[in-house]
Length: 63
Image (cartoon, rainbow, N blue to C red; front, side, top):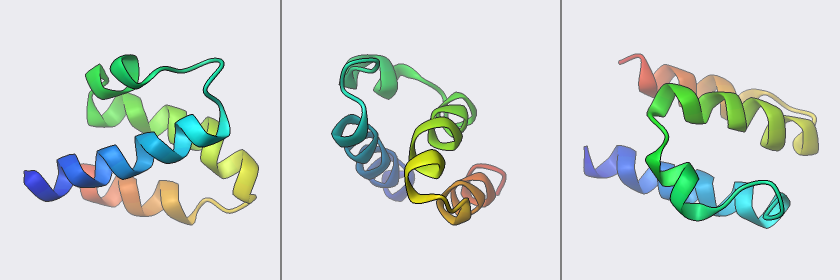
């Protein structure tokens, strides 16, 4: 569980670096893992033009 929380915080910090106008830390922390996945798809995948992070995060959530 600690590893997943740490991973979430890492992802959240990156989302906020990309788009802090539309998201805030508290709202992102309160999202469930599956709801956070949609934000990853929207923000990180669009910036990196690569869905690898989204795929890996999805695999972790579905373990």
